[in-house]
Image (cartoon, rainbow, N blue to C red; front, side, top):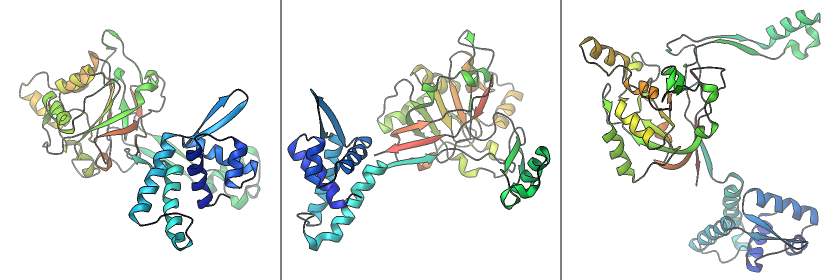
Length: 360
């Protein structure tokens, strides 16, 4: 095991010497060569140490990330009036400080926020979800019968539980593929969900706040541009844009389907023109509520029924519906989003376990 004190000194001493060999590292830290190798691997994995080979000799050095970690520790020590970790009277404080640095190394201060709802038979969906739960005891009985065994052959008369699920491909948090909009997209055969490039599904995220919009209202291209000006951000190709309405806070309440504003055709088209391929919303639909659009259609308003969806017939893109927790993302940009859809052959959409990944 490496002590907190030894771990800190290794980084500090390597920094002062610029580069060291494995043998020098072992000598500096008073460690065996095996332990030194293990520690090198530990620091390399966390990008705190890098290697350089000159001829037949390999040297290690502290990376800028490792230097920054030591710098943060030094600043904290100065604020607390600690001159050196060698002083026994500061031992407790030293251990606490090193513990914080160790957490930074091991975790990289990474936070993952779940942006998905669970698949539930209790939730209002266009296609009702049915889940048949097969418990451990029943699984043991069924398997024993199938293979001609006694149920006692299974420890505690239990076997692997499972579920049989009936649901639509657009249940829960899901991604709509271009093929949902029509047979073609931009004059070419529309991609099905299993054809979506994986590069689209892991990229930099941007959250735009439209919580002041009223239910049934439309989010215009100007609204999107104004929010980008407010957060001082310029979109780049493959950014994943998340539209926050806070409609998800009403999830499972009666009438939730209609409790949200929606994206307009113009706003959707503008995002695509900036190179955005995937966008999502924390509401039942990407468009305005269906009840609102149907009411307008009956009154003779044309071109508004699923107008944002149908942009996908002209320009290729995907959107994600029924996201949650966009309010928990602590900053409007500077984080990653992962939204890989389940690979359903020739599917028009699929379920997504969407997450935001925040590294400080």
